[in-house]
Image (cartoon, rainbow, N blue to C red; front, side, top):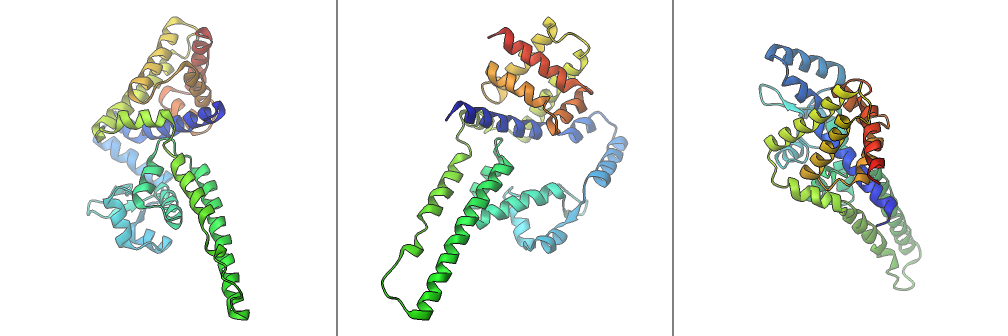
Length: 294
């Protein structure tokens, strides 16, 4: 794997990890009273989500209720929540995940593999879509060739025994490479090994501890990023990533800092817990840390 590919791999890994760990609703709910939590949940649901029942999702997507229930049972597509009566509720994020599941199913991926792929920390939705489009295009061309072949037989009969039209080697090879691509980075393998025995409580603990690091960065953002205390905080972040996820080299740490301040969801998430400007401040501190150790 080239240096550029490695950089892209760990960037996607960390982006997915960061989004997964920053569960802000749960984080802030722990700081509120039960009444405040219910109020927050109501506002969050009303303004940010369109909730659908399993019956509504079935009608919209054409996927049977029984199949959706099965996906819930095996952990492939969990509802966003359950009503007091036990009814499943889904949001837009659930539908996006269902789209990915259905696309992979069309490409004949087993459900177990689909779950492993889309749950992987380095899962890149856009890259997956590109590969899905490529594979579906190959299948389309294959079917068109079969149709033309069948029409030829119907029109003039078979003149010679040509079986090339049935060859799916190209499709099979591309499909194999697409499947193998996920989970091949050393960072992902290390992450998978370290987290394989995590319970839900373990995940929640790590998520809260990880978020707290950026709360602390926010408390320091009026300081000089070169200050010794700030630089110790950078080292604390690096050590935490290494101890809980994968080996975070100085180079990876520097790249993370630039990604955190690069705008979009990651930047917003950091600023949400640390205050406006926290992502930019942490990024500068991480860059200084990297340059001082070169």
